[in-house]
Image (cartoon, rainbow, N blue to C red; front, side, top):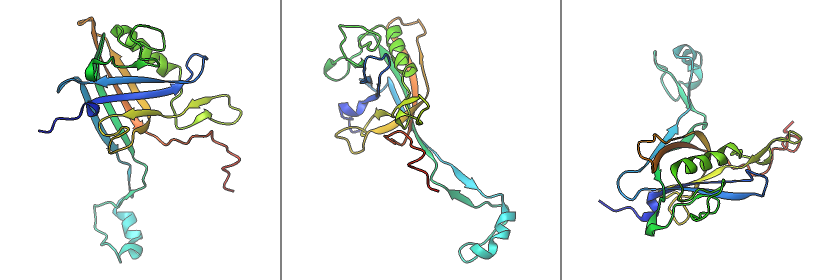
Length: 221
């Protein structure tokens, strides 16, 4: 069995935004497993294959498609419209004083400084502080495909997609990091172990549209 490189055993999400009005910066949340347990990464392609209304429609179009396929009964014609989603669910454990490769502190916020706890960074802190920091960033940023004002004049601003790195999806890996939005993030501090907590977050690959949507510029009429 081939041992995974250390870098392949780290997952991280990076969020860029201005959660407190002091300026845009990037928060990075790193998750690492030193052994076979502690970090679980599940990948899923959520297919969206459209089915026709059954053999009745096939019979109607039989004259069109019979050059290519026979139109049987009780079977549907399926069409892939390219609208599926790629999702990665990360289940992780973290702990007070969490370290990664070479015993470096795992960054949990925008500074990575374990000697200075603040609301935007809880690197190396107690699990309750780490959980609060993560959800502070999630609550005070708008992770979406669009950066800047979502719609002209609406006064609602997006912070662009977050970045997910895991396995070979990273700088220097075979695949590029993924631009993602989040789905159902959660964390649990049961109190049984005062120094650890568990969490789960689903990252759905998203388009990075970059600039705000301009309804006039994109009018195709």
